[in-house]
Image (tube, rainbow, N blue to C red; front, side, top):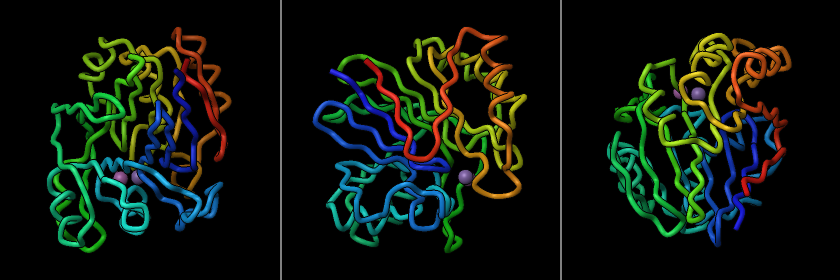
Length: 228
Ligand code: NI
Ligand code: MN
């Protein structure tokens, strides 16, 4: 079994694992760099880390069209339920065995208000243990926090972390995050979509590979990586 992870631009990620298709933070129609159209996406589950528009994105329309289950925090789950979207609410530190693997919601230092002003609860990230026992960490929008070391203790095959600065960790703190997380492979995300999160990623790759054992994989929107 393999797990395929495809970067859809900004913080949107497509995951194929076993017989299941997962879509994380589907900011597609609002992103001119998205490599797919909303209608091409047919996920079984949509995972949403927090309520901001560049993560909620097209969640509601895709979930309704595909009858996908949205996995997110309890507050966003309640907001989705009012719109008749099928959803599963979780909270930080809790995990659940879904058909596609064991998914745990992790801490994120950020905010989560929905675009209409509703409280979107606390922001989070996701730690997925696949059915072939690979560990994939999706940090969500976050600043650096020391408890990334606890997440790293589980032995990460892949970490996808923001490096754009301004709203999340920047390159320097993202390097420190890699030192705490100790993933085999790290993919930087959440940069260059908007002017204030513009970053040069080649120097970051060199710096991280010089100072840690992680392999940095730079994915353009549409690029993918296979986890054996
Ligand atoms: Ni955000
Ligand atoms: Mn964001």
